[in-house]
Length: 199
Image (cartoon, rainbow, N blue to C red; front, side, top):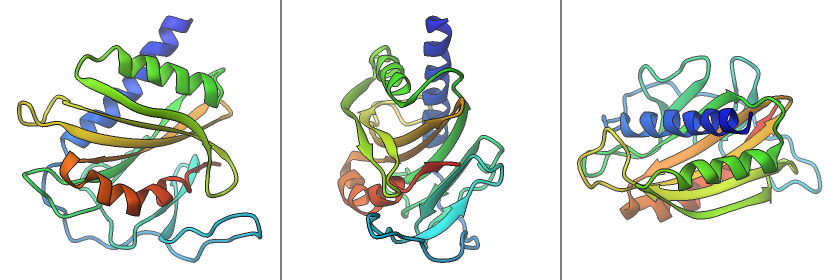
């Protein structure tokens, strides 16, 4: 059972990485997504951006007002947005992946994700923790970097992911960027990733 769960988690990471690696094309002109302003209470820090609700009802998240969905990357389990102009042939992006995680909670999903990253020689784990999200919910947070299939040989990418796990489903939101602009994009995008919430 544990081996099956590790394989399932590795598949989720693999899907996210493959989407990131295939997102090197220039962003297309698209309509902006989401409407409305954030609902806040006294103990929740407001987050900028626009509200986005998963069409399948699995999650909500706030997205940048200038993000554009990448062509062909909105399917039932995955949504992907371009978040910056391409640099050195790669377009930084955010993708949100929904995956079955039967019998798992946030802590076990975090542990298995860390184990999965550790099994891939080309990836290096930088940070892994459980943090409080913008909505007061608990989120997993992972930062890692490395070379993935589909990118030019030797081209390293940086990743920041948040995830929420509830009722047998995991939702993972990942920022993928070149190391050269990762930190500047992280400061802008991490608060939006922290708004992720399983619904």
